[in-house]
Image 1 (cartoon, helix red, strand yellow):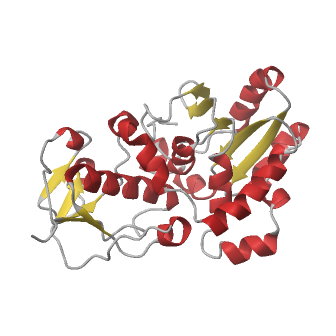
Image 2 (image 1 turned 90 degrees about the horizontal axis):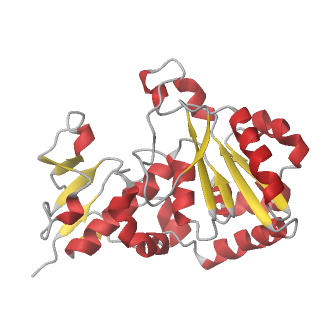
Length: 287
């Protein structure tokens, strides 16, 4: 008998890289749990992770993540309890959504998820050389992700509760607390607008991707995904302080070196500890 299918035709088009990490992870877990063939279009994971799933072979009816059931025409919905079913609730369908459920629902698949996003050898070799340079500067790498860019466009939007740019002061307050407790700490900063934030941390002599990678090689290896070196380095840090962003949250889930993780909580006006594998991906906080 021909194997039944689970597909996602919007992978690579419905959100940026962080969203794609969660979409692909959910799709692959669904296929693994229920013994289905996973089909996808081409996406950046083919290049970065050698993802080699069969191409979508036909038009399938759409099943939507429950939260978005009124946004897309569909034949049914799916929620975070899907993996509790003994049989697949849907087969031969096209999944639509972001699938950023509470990560405790997929924590038992932690090793499998991490295996999906191992970069191909040529890319990993290049990035590891940069990580070696970063580690040569100290013993404890603190990685900050400061999301700016598109988040600044949401300040007058009803979505600003999810997409808010936490102020640098919150990150500096955290550094003041933990810096003296760490062995030879080094600060690494990732941002989509590094020039607007890096000077706020000048007393810590921060390192960026631009400091440790050859830019011509970077441009050659990552012509359409120049954000990936930041993502990878964040996933290797010993301490992480993220934004309210699926990009850095996903990096924290893939991080096997991390000893402590912090995220911004608007109501607390500070960064607080969290567990990447037992948390909501995005927190609603109305500024």
